[in-house]
Structures are given as structure tokens and as C-alpha cells.
Length: 335
Length: 266
Image 1 (cartoon, rainbow over the protein chains, first blue to last red):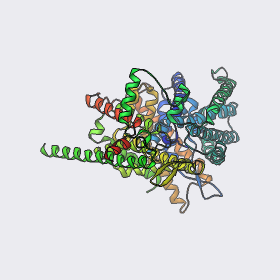
Image 2 (image 1 turned 180 degrees about the vertical axis):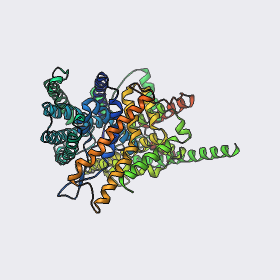
Image 3 (image 1 turned 135 degrees about the horizontal axis):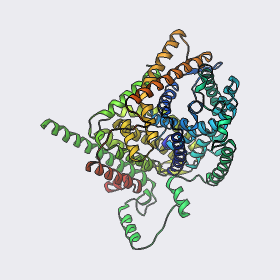
Image 4 (image 1 turned 90 degrees about the horizontal axis):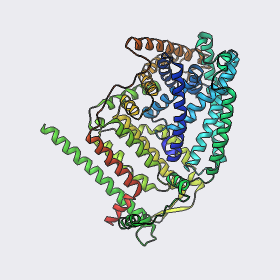
């Protein structure tokens, strides 16, 4: 579910970075308030653990395929939502940099789609309410499976929205959703079962490692109550969903989208001395206005000049690089 | 080579490349990080039909690959994860957008074909840009740049710790899965009855390791947070590098450079 940079428009990427930054900032504050220096190395090692175990293939009974562990829900069940979220950010950044799994610009989207839903929704709305009166094997399985399935559904839906708002695909919204959601429902079920198996083992061997188990009384006066969380999420979903749906049908793209929001048009016009001078410079330098020969409707001009220009620019770059390398070699030889 | 061995090799190889003493590696990490993000931002901001515009942005990776002596083959290998996903999203565009928007000679190209091609090209270029960053900048230096951008120390510490322990835990995972495979020959993955115990054991071992890590960190004077200690001075060459590439990116984004240059010669 890692999104690549090519799948997001800059405006969408920036919005999702902003959302993830808010969630990250809040998590940093909460982890600092916990004032448990021991937790920091545990988070680091757990991040590496999730990274390593995602390389293991688990055979799905009755099929020829295999599944993987769900990092977000597992981390949230062990470290809590805030520690888990920060650890997931680290895992996603390293996956993006070292393995090109997800893009740098799309990192905000990936953090939101995988870490936010997995850790915050998974831990606060699913894991914690189920575990507050103590953990049993059945509850762990229910929480893990429900957590993975619901958070993966939310993540997949966000991927669909982000891609559509970015104007990347021509696929209609309904068709895209119908493609994404069912497959992630199956993946969520398998990941949930694997996560449940691991958490059940931990519950039997070292139950004290599980987060939020039997903590109903201590957490009651907690600042982030269950009802408040639901209320915030419902309001956020209504505002964001309602707002986004207004733009989703237009399918605009990239910078034009941002400009249309700000100025009401994708092509800004301005008058005045500076603008007129700039326009005259542009009309002089724009040898091929609108990618075609001047005063010509020939489409051939568009493609041909582009190909010739491309060959010349790239040839020039390659030639300059060879010259520089040659010069560098000669200088090194002299030394 | 198994998936885990490949991952360990890849991490070690990238780390070795980033440690090399080459001119590109010596550029200030903040400059490289900024330029990479700016470049990706510019590439993805092109209109979906503007395939020549996107193509013109190939100039940056081309020059850095050549001057930095960085292997293109390895960068292409990294596309294996991104390209299929991008293709899945773009492959249906030609079916939904059939209006002819460009002619190459007498051959008409529909909007869907152009948007699909530009999407794929964007995917390739953005992966190349990220690869160039990580191939010339160590994670420690990237973390140093993140600290300069006021990313919380706690988060930077996480990234450093995860990176430090990835190879250790990958090696441990490899040992466990190898031992399992030797006892269960001709089996594709881990059977469902071993899911919990196999990974659970690894998890408990990791938790114990975290305790040991914490104790040894305390013995070395750890007091809650630590960050990258590498400091790099910002030099004139860094400013020039940043300025020149920023200008190139903006110019290539605003003007159809390929067409302009082509028109001079026709």
C-alpha cells in the first residue's frame, strides 16, 4: 500500500504532510510526557523488528500464497498509539530511502494511510476498548483481526482518494474503490490473523509487554477518552470527507489545482509594466509557443522540435559530463 | 540469495556507497535533501499530458549519475517495487481518455496514453532522485539534515536506532527462518501453527535486546535522547550547487526547454 511519488500531486502531498506532522508532533509530546527513557531504545529495536519480520512469508492455509505481519497494529499493541506511530514513521522513512518502497514526497500520505490508522484507530478505538477489562486469547484475536481489517480498509480508501484528487488516474471513483477495498479486506484478514498469533504468544509468555491491558481505571481520567476520540474522528471525517468530495469530481491536476483554489482560474492574468516586460521577454524566448511552431497549427512541429531539442540537451549534458570527467582525470594524473 | 540476504546486502551496499569520499558525497546533506524534495516536487507538478516537460527533467539524474560515478543498473533495480504499482494505476488511462491530444508525425496519441507514459516517467525519475540522495548521503547525515530542519530529536533518534538495528535483526530473522526451512524442506513459507511461536520468540528476543541496548546506552551516558553527532560546515560550493540546480529545475519547469532548443536547430 506504499504510495509512490508519481501518484500524488504536490498539493495533496503537502496536505498529507501537514496532517501527519500534526499527528507526529502530538505523539512526540505524549511520549515525552510519559518520561520513560527506557521506551526510546525499545521503540527503535521494535521498529527494526517490524522491518525484519515483514520479510518473512507466512503460508496462508488452503491457498498457494503468503502474507505478512501488520506493523501498525502490532506496534500499537506493544508500544501504545504514540510510541507505535513514531516508530512507524521511522520504519516508513527507512523503507522509502533504502528500498524505494514509497516516495519521499508521498511519505506524508504513507504515514497517514499506514501509521495513523494502524496506530491511532487501531490502538485507541479497537485495541484499548477491547482490552480495558483484561486480555484473553479471543479478545486479542478479535482486536487484531478487526484492527488490521478496519485500518487497512481506511488506508486503502485514503490511497484511492489521494490518487483521485491528484488527478493521476482516469479510473472512475466507484471502479477504483471497488478494486482497492475487497483486495485489502482479504489482506487485512490474513495480516490480522498473523498479528493475532504473535500477540497471543506474547500474552502467554510475557503479558506485561502488551499495552493498555486492564487499564480501564487508570486511563479513565486520561485526556484522550474513547468518546472524545470518536467525536473528533466523526467531525474530522465529516469535514474532510465533505470538503474533499467537492473537489474529487473535478479531477484537476497539480499546480493548476492549487491555482484554481486560490485564484479561481488556472491561468492568471496580470497587467502593469513589469508583467508586460516579462510577457514580451517570454514571447521572444518562447520560440515554440504552446509547443508548436509560431503561427502554425502543425502538431508535427510540436513533437519534432521536442525530440530534436531533447536529443541536443541530453547530448550536451552527456558531452559536458565526459569533458568534466576527462578534465578531472587529467588533474588527478598530474597530481 | 534469499529475500532477507538481499535486503542485508542492499543496506550494506548503500551504506558503503554513501561513505565514499566523492564530490557528490561531500555536498552538504541539507542541500541534497532540499534539492531531492524540490526536484520530486517539480517533476510531479507537470501536467499529465506534458510528457516532454517531464522528460526534460531527466537532466538532473543524468548528470549526477555520470559525474558521481553511480550505477544506473542499481537504480533501475529499485524500480521493481514502484513501477508495477504506478503501472497498475496508469494502465487503464488509455481506456478512459481516448481523445487524441498529440500527433507524432501522422500517429495520433490519446490523452490516456500520454498520461500513462508521463506517470511512468514520473515514477522512474522520482525513484532515481531518491536513490541519488541515499547513494551519496548516509542515514546519519540525512538525520543531521532533519535536525537542522528542527525535526524533533526523539523522532530522529528513532530513525537512527531503527537503522542501526535493522541489519542485526535481519540477520537474526534469517537464522530463524533458515533453521525453520531446514526442518520443513520444500515448504514455501511459515506454516500457520508456527506463526505465533516463531515470530513471538524473535519479538521477545528483540525486547530483551532492547533492554540490553538501553543498559549499555546508559553506561555510555545516555540521558533520554541522542542525535547524529556529525556536523558538516555549509560551504560556498554547497550554496552554488543549491542555487544552480534550483534555477535549472525552475527553468525546466516553466519553459519547454527541449522544444526551445530543438527549434533553434530546425
